[in-house]
Image (cartoon, rainbow, N blue to C red; front, side, top):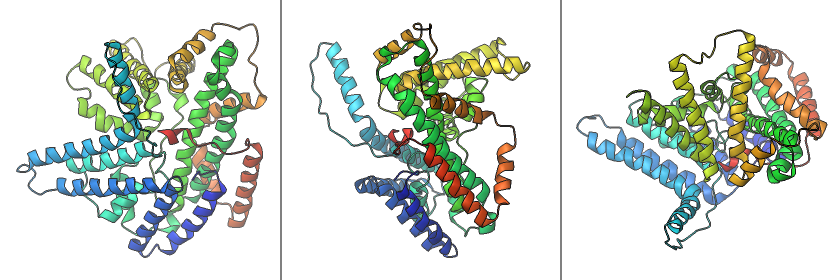
Length: 474
């Protein structure tokens, strides 16, 4: 069920008033929210609702088993339990997402050694959003093991893991950020409706007007047959994909956060103008922030973080980003993308320690040079992220050196979409909170008319049909 569809509009038009009607009956409210979330996920495939339910039961059992009073006496048992929890979640993720990838990779390795082995290759359907709800389940049991939270009742945990706004593509919400919100009735007067409406309308615009227009006009043609294009068109395609993936993914997060706000729930922000970053570290503080924090807290720190000296710190940065790349999909292209980011982060840290680069210092000219440089470093990574093969990467990067005797040829809408997609990240500080406050002050009838007109404009500007969000495949 896609957000920008009539199907979701009808679904949410039913769910929203019922949840508020049940506001003073918390247990009934949670049951209804759980059922609604299963219906939402079941719109893709009902058979995978059982996968979420099974993950809920197993992780809840492990979480409760980990929570014991005599921690020291049961330390060995708790270590076995947390190992089992991580193995279970990674096993589920690995089977559905990486079975074919690792099977084919192993076959290729054995073939290179002169061994002709044919391993069983199963056709496995990838459940939508499995990476997101698996990471949330892992953080729940790990936080219990670390004694940062206590197990919640089964119903509360089931709602947390399946909650429909962020179930499919995030944000990755921690148990400590959401579970306490499920315990008490919500205050309708505390709903930040101005921000919710702005996020939903803005998200729809970013998705169906900017991202989908760029996908159809420049990104898909260029990346499908890069050898047919010269440098200007290839560069436009790379810029187009950088804006497309930002607008597509941040749009889902915006709509999810806005829908949750209308339900009386608060999710963490997931994007903060990432193309304004002046360093790659700053980029990852702004891009997919909930994943960045997850990787930092559960992977980078577990590997040792910045403890143990410079070389180990660089190694941990590189490993974290390599695994973060693999999280995105079963392809060596994602691993290379993660390697580019991990290697550059380590290099950036080393240069900073040497005093050879100083981020955050200097005048406006230096700040803009740093932003432009980091944007192009990120764009280089996007080439590997989007391309289907290394030969396609070679065609793109090699083709950038040719054909500079003409300007790029593309529909005007593509240039406008790129300009708007980058420009919205440079809105003045405080502009969005002021807009939210202004929306709050609009009378209900006028607000309804305004939103209806906004949706009509978005529909008129959008290409026909609705493409799935990019991160549905992750």
